[in-house]
Image 1 (cartoon, rainbow, N blue to C red):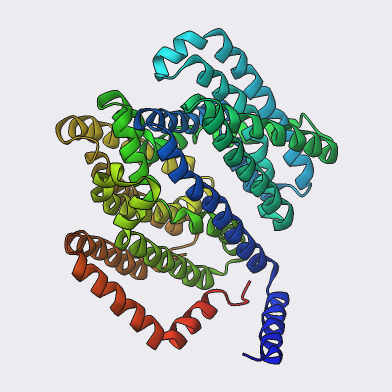
Image 2 (cartoon, one colour):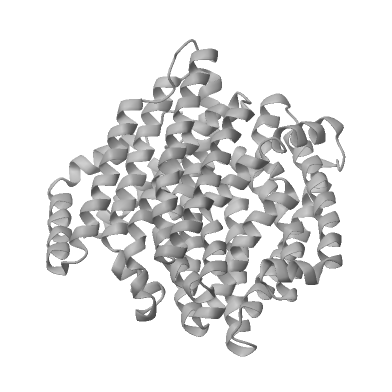
Length: 488
């Protein structure tokens, strides 16, 4: 290719980038950031699985699960009220500052409780006392990062957020590898190093937020946030039960070694979060904005495109599940391959239910958000307890998939109810399109489960797909262009 031709292509790409709307630019950079963030995690995961024993890696995975659920209790997930606050009030930096003030107060109170009852909590959580301390220290700084990140996404300030996120992720990964390699090959070394990086960044963010917002206490913001999030806490905790409680129950019923096996499979099945995290960074505010503007047809079109894209990506992960496990964990984790497919289908339904739940959250229908979450969380705990004991850790993937499917159906019913009561029956999404995409993803999962046992057939199908993509490349390019079009 000539130098002039190369310059023309670069110029065209630059012009297209300049012509993108701010939300599309933000989506692009959040996607890049998520890829780099997850990419760093992907690179370090094979390192940690080989440097740590399965018991130590299982302990680290159990710690992360407890971190997820206790963070909700400590911080009350108050950052989730921010978009609703931004709909009501204009001074976004003051809202951010006041919310961070409330989060700091709550997390400091809980840190005191954690220190006083450190030994009892260590026995309850089945974690060393040092990790219990790390838990409550990390919550202080995670809270400000969550609030600050959502504010940056809402105002599409992707530059600062991308840079800070990458510094945090890279710093935690590099220091973690150093700690495990040169100090002690234990879960404690990995966690303490990560907590140290989180604390440094958190301190900087607190100073910046309070300096710019100049508000620690705001009665309206505090009361609205507490009134919005506390009733939804059963929903948030139920989401945790569906997403991460599997590892905790496997730890209690089977042991840390099986937690490690399940964690590798779950990490492989959740690779799609590389993309969905970035999509949600802009699509969640986009949903709020389109609902507010009454642009329902465009919202329905975009929702179908996003779901189809997620489904295609998950199909790719399912198809390469064996290879992904070998890269992530090595041969000692190969038995976990069989559970990746139900995990992937569960991840799809987990993503889909959020479309319906956000409509209920927008119209502040807290009860209809909480009820299905509680019901499905209880069902998941019961099924996990029964079938993990009967069939081992693999059962957790199937019970979670079934519960997510039921979860989606219930949320879809309440979403229709909201549309009928508030929008006079006007639907925000294309129900038939969503149904067909969901059926397609499930059928693909069943087919891949079959062909995974016949490597010659699997690789023949992969080659055929690649050839088809090359032949139909223009069609694929047009579809992608339509998905990232300039419509706002």
